[in-house]
Each structure stands twice: as structure tokens, then as C-alpha cells.
Length: 224
Image (cartoon, rainbow, N blue to C red; front, side, top):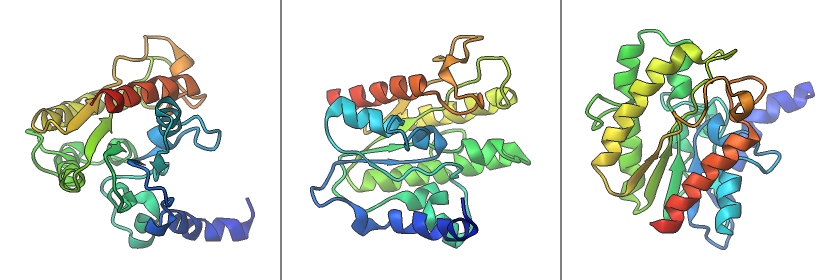
């Protein structure tokens, strides 16, 4: 990548995230989140890509790798690094969303307090609860996609298993309080020792995993 492109990249992302970029045919499904959703998008094999193929309808994907729920920098936040700011106004029936992993697992200090900032133990407070409340207020149903767990071998995220379980237990409680919120857990998807569900970095989903998760999400939309 040239130096000029590196300097311009945040602005290019910002332009791609602008509301007027939504196609004129008013698609009804929006995706927003971090690299769990965005991975393999260049190859057309991401989770939102799979949902679009399964349902034979467009999915507007605003997800950005490394994005967080708690993010204070204004320019890069508006460019998609803040997941809440990935939202684009539209006539959405469904919003597919994920997040929280990067907040806890990249340089996390005092994870207990940060967890509470993301979502409280009862599922009613915190930034995730506020974000989902805002999305539901638009009339859209929400599908929150949980993270893969490591296969127990050769992964930098192995030590994060307890934090992931705690975060998603709280999201499960939140979803139980609103029939318009669906939580897709992927914590049991990866068999122990099976590397095929992860990309070579052993952090992100493989094409196989993205496909399986996308089909689970599509089935929820199809049947609800």
C-alpha cells in the first residue's frame, strides 16, 4: 500500500460509510460490527455475504475490522471504528451486529470495569444495551452474533475464553428481555483441536466458519 493510500484510508472508509451510499432499492438488512463480520468480505465470503446469498437479497455491510463498542476518537470513530457509528439510517427490518471482543481482548486493563461499561450483569445497562435499544427503537429486529472460541491449540485468544463467556452470558440475558433481539452463540461451534474453523491467524473465522454462522443468521431472518 502506498504512503498516500495509507494517509487517505480513514477518509475512504468514511466515505464508504456515508448514509447516501445505501442503494436506492432500499435493502432491509444492515450489518455492523468488527472483523468477525468483516472477515473475507473482499472475497465475498463474509458472514453478511453468506446471509445475502442464502436469502437472495442484499445486505448492506458496514462492519470494520478492529472496530470497538467503546471508542472515543471522533474521526476514525465516524469512519467505522466505533461500531455504534456504523449505523446508517434506512428502512431496516433486520440489523446484524456484533462487538465487544476488541474492547476486552486488545490491551484490556481492569476488565471487570470495562465489562460493566459494555453491558451490566443483568443485561440492562452499558453501551451494548444502549446500542441495541437504539436499534430496536427504529423498528428493526436485531441479531447479535457471538464470537468463536479457540480450539484450544495455538491461538492468541485462548486466554480470553472466560471473558468471552461472561460477556455473552450478559448478552443472552439482554436478548431474553426483548423478543425482537436474537443472540447467535458460536461458543460451541469449534471442536477441540479443530483448526478448520479459524483463519491461519487462529483468531478470525475461516471461510468455513463464516459460512456456517451466516447460514444460522439467515435462518433466523427466514423464520421470524
